[in-house]
Image (tube, rainbow, N blue to C red; front, side, top):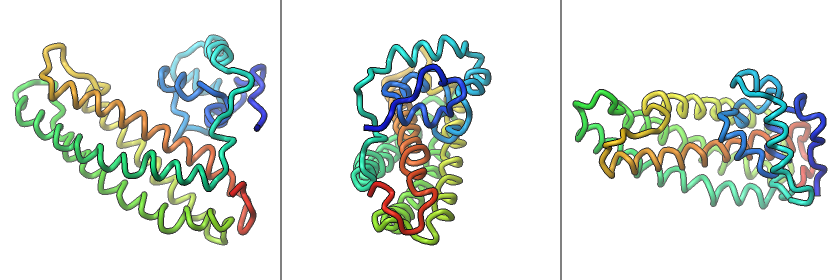
Length: 232
C-alpha cells in the first residue's frame, strides 16, 4: 500500500495528490468547492485561500476522515484502473447526458416564461456530449492501449492533449453551474425540473471524480515513461 500523506505537511501538498492518497479527501473537497481535478496542481493552502476557507480547519477535517489503514485508488494497478474508468464513467456519462439533454429540453419549453429557467442548457449539454464522445474514443483507441503496453514516444503529448480537453470539460461544468444557479431548482419546481437538477449534480460529481482519477492518479504514472512498466 502506498504511503498516506503526512497530515502535518498538508498545506503545502497539492490538492490533486491529497485527493489521490487520502481516503475521504475527494468528498471533502467537493463539499467545499475545492477544484482537485483540473485544478489539482494547486496547494491546499492556495486552494483554501481561493475559496476563503480556513486551511487549518480544512486540514483537521481531512485528518479526521483519514483512516490510517484504508486503501485508495492510488493502490490500484494501471490496467485495473483503466478498466474501472471505462466501465464506471465512459458509457455512463454518455448515457446520462442523453437523458439530461431530454430533460433540459422539456424544462426549457414548459417553463420558458420563468425568469430562472436554464435557457440554452440542452444545447450546452449536447455540445458537451459530442465533445466527450470524441474525447473518450481517443482515450479508448489511442491513449489507454498505449498505457497498457507500458508507454510509448507519443504518450506525453497524448496525455497533454487529454488534460487540455479535461480543462474544457471543467469549463463546461462551470457554465452549467452558472446557467442552473448551482444545479438548483426553484422551491415550486415541477418533478422534471427537480429530476434535472438531481441528475446534473450526479453527473457533475462523477465527471469531477473521473477527471481526478486520470489527471492525478493514472497520468502521473506515465509522466516519465516511454516504454516502462508504470504499474501496469
